[in-house]
Amino acid sequence: MTVLVTGGAGYIGSHMVHALADAGERVVVIDNLSTGFSSFVPSGVPLFIGDAGDENLVEGVITQHRIDNIIHFAGSVVVPDSMRDPLGYYRNNTMTTRSLLNAAVKSGVSRFIFSSTAAVYGNPDQVPVPEHARTRPVSPYGSSKLMTEIMLHDVATAHGMSYVVLRYFNVAGADPQGRVGLATIGATHLLKIAVEAATGQRAKIDVFGTDYPTPDGSCIRDFIHVSDLVEAHRAALAYLRAGGASATLNCGYGRGYSVLETIEAVRHVSMRNFAVQYAPRRPGDIMTMVADTARIRSLLDWTPRYDDLQTIAAHALAWEEKLLRERTAELRQAQSA
Image (cartoon, rainbow, N blue to C red; front, side, top):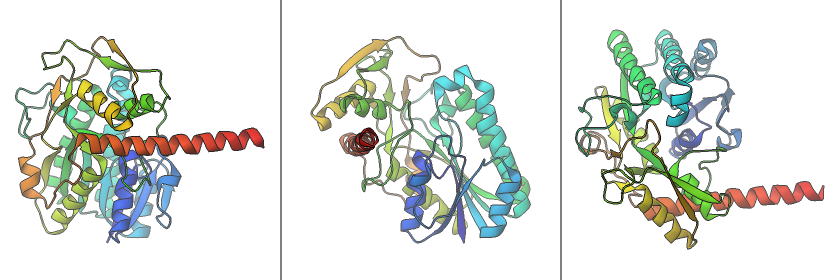
């Protein structure tokens, strides 16, 4: 059995590919490298550079490598960008997945794992938010993912496919072994920005909104370590292979930290201070988002290993320092050439 990972050269996808390869799985990657890096794909893992929505490419890869499982990461993920370019998000997230599913159905793929988002809930009526909560996305990003969830459910019902939808909360951190991490230029992840500020690559960090009705006025998020997240995917794959019914599951720890608490965690692990600038709220931002994790913990054989904000921050910082060392060495080499 072979697993196709779309977006497998990106931040979360590359962690997934390493985890699968470490476990002895046969794995193949499709990535257009718009935000991913070919160097993030482990040696020996086939990488096809192209779009996950290219049905001819996908069908060829499925046939050539006898794919029977797809884990789909490819897509656009920045909420503010989706507010500016909604059609781009519907194209990259919803339409691409439609084409990928069509290729999967025609090729007889039986299991599909989809990376969705807590943004499908919008501003929830209850916190922690359970999977049965009303879905009212407040951004095109969340709407594009919700549309894809609905489409996947309908396709699976019509064609006998089994699936797991994993609704991510706030993914952060990096591979504890330092092999991969978040390297996208201009990334908008809070912890990424904070460790860039801690390493002197940013003059400051902006906090958008300090007037929310929360303990310190800033938004609250449920951070999950990227390595724990990919282990949830491996557990979901094992669940489907064992005949488990299709399911939609939250991926978080069930505990929230404010933006200001997160910044303090980075200051603590880095032992460095950096400037914070307060700015108005951004359109599309959600005040408080914390997962109800009862369902994933009961359904999957999954136990988080890195459920600690300072650990997550420390791994993110170690990765950022590694990137900075590599860039500095490349610059010196170029200057001496």
